[in-house]
Image (tube, rainbow, N blue to C red):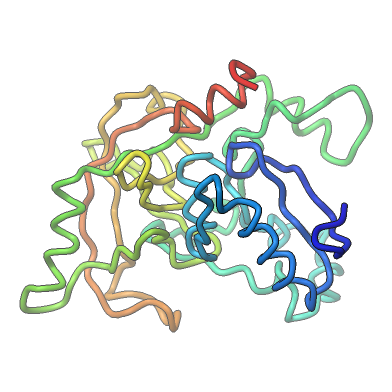
Length: 271
């Protein structure tokens, strides 16, 4: 399509959960296209949100992007790993969060973990089909939203104003600090029953929400669990992670997507 005389490609992918497109085109046309969109949207109250706001939309829409690449342990992929340039996205995969495991396989995900299992079609042959067909008979996890307890969120911010090491900074509106964020979610007994990933503040719901991959037996909306916020031993060597201490945050399981409007759109209740 053309906007202000500039040719762009419009991708309708629905990541935000609402009607919209992602535009791609020549870098030098960016300012022209952006100005044209803002001008056309001015009568409707359009506002420039910024890049960080873009990522915070995942908390409402439940789009779990950037899963950890499952390429690091298979002997069949050894040649691929040797070939893989160091500046590729897979080679630069970056883990973060309170969930720590010596097994990289514990960070791999399935379509059920990400909530995209309905996109699997077994009407044609493809690599991995047999494994997915077997997995479909007994999926282990599912995608859910976690609502962070308001008092515990307030305690995180209050720690910045108290003597000593503060809790991990809860940056707003988007709080994840690694491409692949894995925060441990536990039942009252201490057993890990899920992993929290994308964390953000939604002004629409006035809540801190995170997306989670939950064990099915603890995924019922309304279930109360505990999330560990912050990395062990004062934080990792990642330059974007300040020295901090861990804390526990009470969370409540909720549907994903969390926003009712988004759920209605995805289920075709509203057009």
